[in-house]
Image 1 (cartoon, one colour):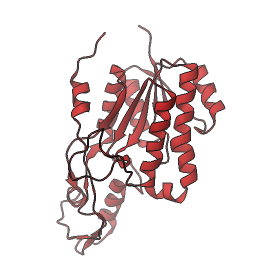
Image 2 (cartoon, rainbow, N blue to C red):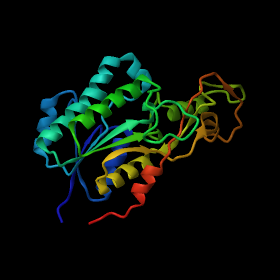
Image 3 (cartoon, helix red, strand yellow):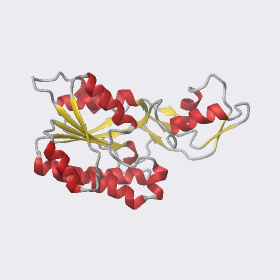
Image 4 (cartoon, helix red, strand yellow):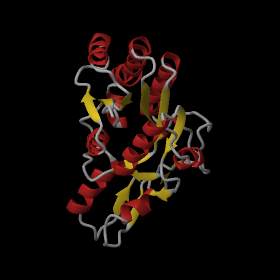
Length: 262
């Protein structure tokens, strides 16, 4: 049986590193895109040199603060770069399955679990760049799966993401004092990056097309998530800001529960 080859953009990131390791464990061959996703010629060279069965597109500028500081670059990478990849695949390898890692930030905050047809009103400029990427990807490649990933965390993450920021604060601050926390009452749907990678691989195995929430389906207040990271009882002081992003994962569960067909 021929070994299937998988292309990965953004392979050096937290999720990309985990995915590549898991794919190798499952005997897939992988090739990491090492060029500039904004450069179509570099993408074309990569696609032509490899006969990919699937391409997993993770390359992006992610931290919302970094997106805000370099918004034009973020649109070039997250939106136009996604269009470039989709366009090249459609031209050079139209049957190759493409996964695009989008985000829950595309949605409007809601007190109820959000389904894939929920209202689109990005809560951040990062979400706006990723939704633009969704639109451009769908316009340029039909064999496409969009995964809207909710609040992913992992022990290998580095600041400015929430999990490593909180871990660092818990290690360096005097926890007998009030623990100031912006968005303490906000609700998020947390999922470990290991589980996110497993879901993406399952979607790839089924060659699923469409848009899917990738999440746990469970809402947790940020204050409770932070408290779960330490045995010491914190006196959390809410510094304002409140919104809610929790996924309805019924569509995802239905697909994952289906048996793969030969």
